[in-house]
Length: 327
Image 1 (cartoon, rainbow, N blue to C red):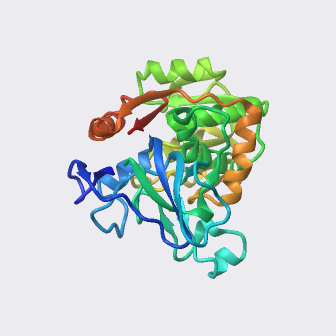
Image 2: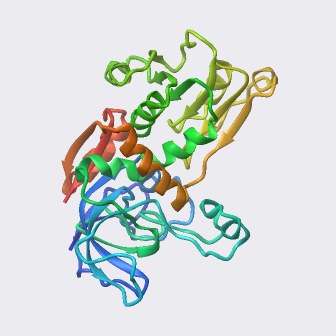
């Protein structure tokens, strides 16, 4: 197998040839057909997440087919198409797991962060955390749904049922969740980097009522806003944009520091929330919604060996929609 490997924080990924992996008793080996490139991959590569053990293979938006089964696996079959998401394992024993909140597990493992991910030709994954995908849909189009879609869906649910939704950072997750929101009958207001006419154009093509710079006020007060960009400075702007009683949801696993802001922005029962990871139930629910809403991902495809260049483009804001690597 081949893999793009991170050997230390901040270094370029290195293409390595390895022995084909063998699955453990509860695992499957998956031949990767496509792997989306997520902003969380940047946080891993740049060393912004804690407790990374090197070397590590990033990537957690994986679509592929099962090539080998662990001795105890009965839920999947050889040749079956599956998705491998960010959440790779939970303990099942801590208070959070026992109360249906496995996304907050005390002893989790994460694909492409604490276990090797999908920037490779093959990956070993715990079968219990893989999603059977069936045969409908294209591998490349599905890949971004495995994190951008799933975390976006969890964020949208946490944002509540308000009709006017702001999306700060209109990238992979933003353009997916905008489609879900429009399907639900909501109005979408897209906030991008100043001058990002491509992202603003994509937002409008997907039915956004308005698209503009993150520093610009929306034309109407919002019921809720989701912040996908990892920029703490967006929090006061989003709070200012929502109405009394509105919600602001921070969707990223990492964000730069939130600057001081006047209490007046939070007052009148505005709420500031964060989203952590996902649950398997989130995935089951979202993939049903994605099919009903006929979600179409806007993707740019690159060969696996160009992972470093793709990460650089993502860091510079030069990817519109979602980037996908193909072995």
